[in-house]
Length: 232
Image (cartoon, rainbow, N blue to C red):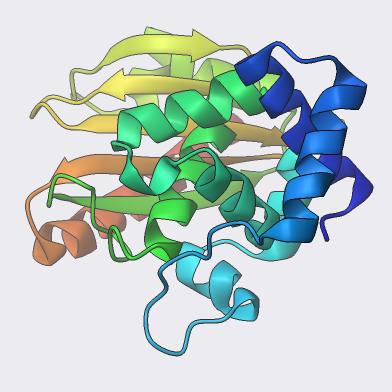
């Protein structure tokens, strides 16, 4: 049985899908739970719910703090909506539209779900390419950190001569960048207090694991440079 918060999310999702009133939608959800369990995720051999955070690459505690649901609840909710048969884009749209999660955490939930379902391995995209992730915390307000990425002049100080285009930006939460070689960078920002914040990114559309390892090191170096720029 889901927690009360998880149940409300499932009820709201059914309301949007069927047009039912809250009471009717809730009754149907609870009735279905009495007569049949939600579809079980086809998991890798030996995988149980306690493994979900490890496989997804993000702990239950963090995903629940940021989205309101544990991985087990997300798997149940997304399975219920048929996400296992959807493309990455459609799963992300489902998460964002039905469950009202912002763009950065929409991607994190979608990728984690795909890993849990065996639709991709760590570092791999659904199209067979790979992605590198990196994160870093800085002693600056989240708005300052966000602007260091958004402002072209400031960005050049730590990113160098790389030509990138900001595809979309939501202050001060997230942005997506087009990289010089055609790859895509998704960036998320989190406030950790009045003068502390973190940035996390996924650099997608890389060709292989060697490129992943190389790109991770390059971003570690760039994050060092970003720290120097923020300190000035």
